[in-house]
Image 1 (cartoon, helix red, strand yellow):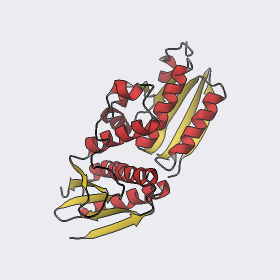
Image 2 (cartoon, rainbow over the protein chains, first blue to last red):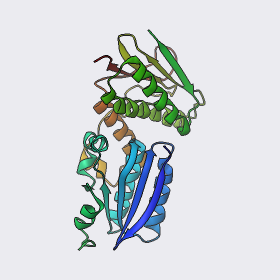
Image 3 (cartoon, helix red, strand yellow):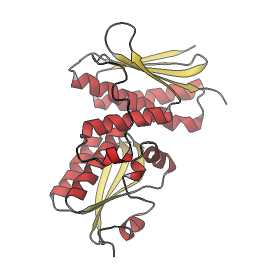
Image 4 (cartoon, each protein chain N blue to C red):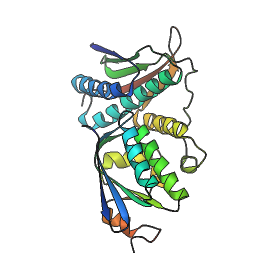
Length: 118
Length: 144
């Protein structure tokens, strides 16, 4: 399945819903979308991976890039993921210690350390 | 024994095709259903690595993927890039991954190898027997 990207706003957070396959071919589109959001002034970003059925190292690299950019700008970045195959990918790469990972968008908002979810 | 060979121009768009073929052949070979996600990811990572190396070194030759099912399911992904086998094999820890100075390319390479090593129990990266290039060889058990 091709990559799908959709954004919605929940309070002060922008939720980017990603679906389909994130790989070496489609990851540049995800990177562009995240850069558009960040360059457009969005500072609280949640990427919802709920409809992702494939994620590779290129996609993970894009997500780390966005995390670093937002941290440097004083913003926050979190992932929503509750699928075991994807969670295993985060554990194997140690990226589960780098990203805030939450089972739902609501949980991600409630846990936002910048306080935007309060 | 059945062998399926696929060679493709080193372009990202073809990596998905290689994954699809790799999983289809794995299923036919009798690889357990619950391993197929890992097969798909590992073949994708090996092909992504090969495509990246071909592009980095300006090598227009195709990337070769060879799948065979003699006793086990074996996949070889062969690139023709002039580097020493094993470069980039070091896995990164969490502090290194979050380090500001780590480039996107280095991060993706490190993460790609972590995925290969994590998902493939029987993994070898070695120079090709003839000419330049490296071969990523992965083996999975077949049968119940």
